[in-house]
Image (cartoon, rainbow, N blue to C red; front, top):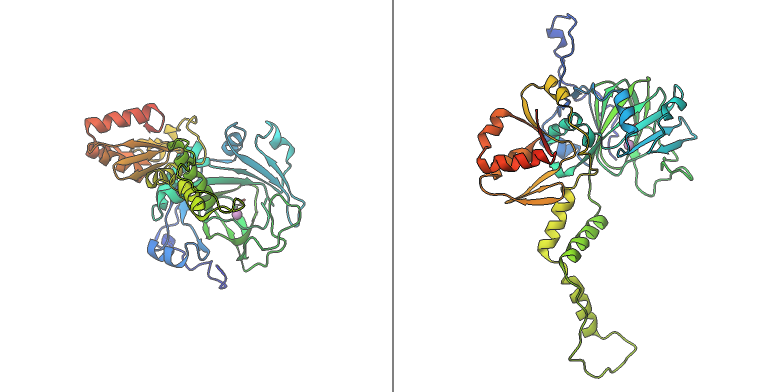
Length: 403
Ligand code: SIN
Ligand code: CO
């Protein structure tokens, strides 16, 4: 099982601290955009940890000062935002409030033992989404979203496991993490529990994460995080693992949308020997007729359309250009946080729609797909009249914003 050898999670990957080389003069932390630096070679991470084994990466992230608790609370009250408040500690009882949340909900919660979870913050706050550029050692389509939690002291979502890979990034305050065994659907859960909490969780590792510490967990590893102080903010960079049942539904939808209704015909039928059975030839004709609807072109379209569709539509949230410029004055253009852009040869898939690109447009769109913020010189290097026209259109539609 992942993450078991004692002491493995802690310490090993701590980057060499430059502190002893520096005079201890107090330094004001410079404002930066969110950053995550994988403290090992990506190939080694993929080989040793990805989908296999937990990893604690002390001090691997920074620039996580925003969103603060107030910004998160405000976001959680927005109509289009998915949020939950989980109250409880220890052995429970636990309760869950799902969005839409009442305007005065935070006044009723008390000082301890609750957590606010806000889903897909990257879709709404573009500055948060910029962290995702630092996960380019994985394909963009594999990223789902960034959930952010704010917890009061003692707040927790209880012992559980997730079905997806996640990087848990401590942005503010401290969280005590307990890590357990690898679980699956047969692992006993607490009875009648909408949170699907584990009935028991033997603790294999335990440590406290502080600001900038990052914990990678593969799918299935039991974990339980408890806020040690009352300003505990944790980002969860979650990955999408397409569910084949859902993919099949998308493929069926795309194939059916492209085809006309066609009925079974049998003009050459011969006399039926046994009317109680489905004859071999009839069965084969029926199955072939249905499967012929699965056209390779439509299947591919379904895959690209699905993978380029954001989890939520957050385009109505304006980009905070001041926030971004203050932290990186070189940014000339930024991609809105709820935009997914996936390349397929001459096509670009943007939020579920395909665009056929001309030769003059391709280098620009390649750049736009490769990351989320762009310098003037990078844009100049790929700009042509046709590229400018397409970019202008995408800016008008809110997918990109000049700063
Ligand atoms: C949290 O942020 O409170 C919990 C995230 C998790 O355990 O998956
Ligand atoms: Co979890």
